[in-house]
View 1: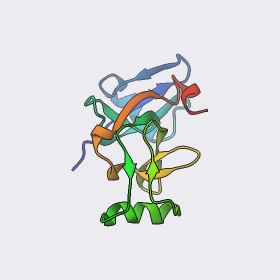
View 2 (view 1 turned 90 degrees about the horizontal axis):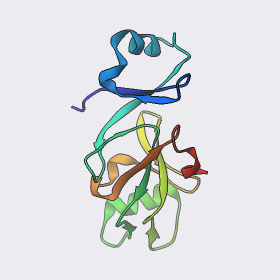
View 3 (view 1 turned 180 degrees about the vertical axis):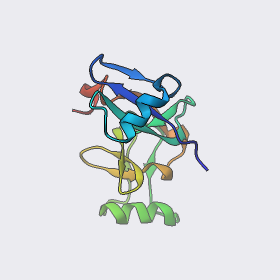
View 4 (view 1 turned 135 degrees about the horizontal axis):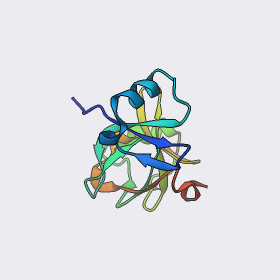
Length: 138
């Protein structure tokens, strides 16, 4: 079972607040929708290649990744899901953001959308987040 924790973007002070510093009152207000000053981001339960916790809203870069369906049913399934017919899909160096969609944490950009659980932590590196580094995903 994954650890359930959050961090929050403080809209007023333009800073990230980590789980230990959120406090029960602020978290409860956020979860009940009472606070308009914070944007909550949930922990995915995963860490990146540097062992840093990955949260929704993080921006990541992909490493050492080539999707080739030959003799790999999991990769073939991914390729069918995204509707691509090329034999190889190179995601090396792609910048993606983490979003929570339909009950899953997804790696997304304008071209791709993948369930984050399909990749090794060694392939994912956090390079920022959508609040402090929005220029990375434009």
